[in-house]
Image 1: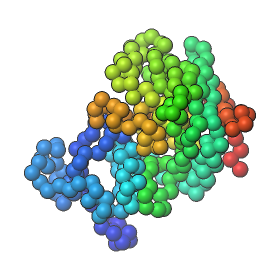
Image 2: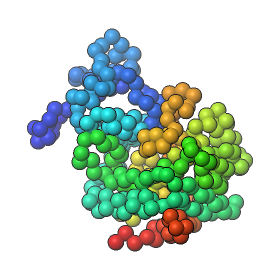
Image 3: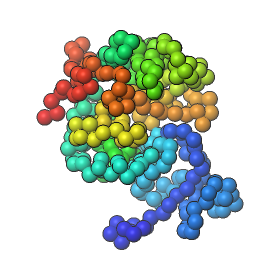
Image 4: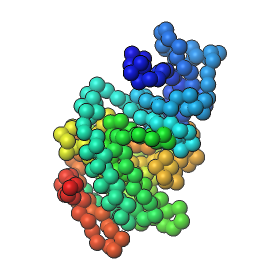
Length: 324
């Protein structure tokens, strides 16, 4: 509000009930806060005037969402229908401010370069090393297009993270024929390495033993859509000297990440209807940088081009492509 004169627009604070999960759908109604103390619970809003989100979008062309749980998926879907620009900032903290001071023209250039590579690729091959050995994974990128999230949102009909800096693609999920995504994907939880067996682009089983492995196996059994491989992401902010801070919003932009769960907001096939309840909907990124998974090393990432040739992309966790 202090900047409304220089912005040439009014600003409002909008409240909505907690959806309790990253990238779950937003509720039907929201409240515009008219000043005074904030309510401590949503129950204090009962009986007060509210509006639907379509009405909110019609009156507010720019939205900034520094929410606890990510609103990226629902706002991306809303931007396809409404002329809004939305910056999603889940878990935003003061120590993310340096990531907003980067040269986003250069960030966007690198992101667009990687998006072009993903567009040309029919697959991606990975070799992960960990104390138990090595695991190989192949992601099927046929029938899919790459996307760029370079931190620039100049036109209506767009939503994306800030800070930003990644190219991403949804692996082929097998909607018309079996997906070629297969192999073993390791993810570090605390000191434990959970190893997922991937078949047809889904985590079909957990091969490892331990408390985290058992919890993940139970999650897959009760919520199969959680095991969908929903995104291959290539962050570019690591080479700018940024380090992870323990928040996915920034950490995933530093390098390689692979996500489980919801994908339809990125052009995939798995959405809220595939989950057992609205509260179960999730899109969760597993970030492969040394600070977040110190015992899992990304030894190799190759993109497979249309003619079958491998294009070296990463070695030992670092990009080996020439961004120039």
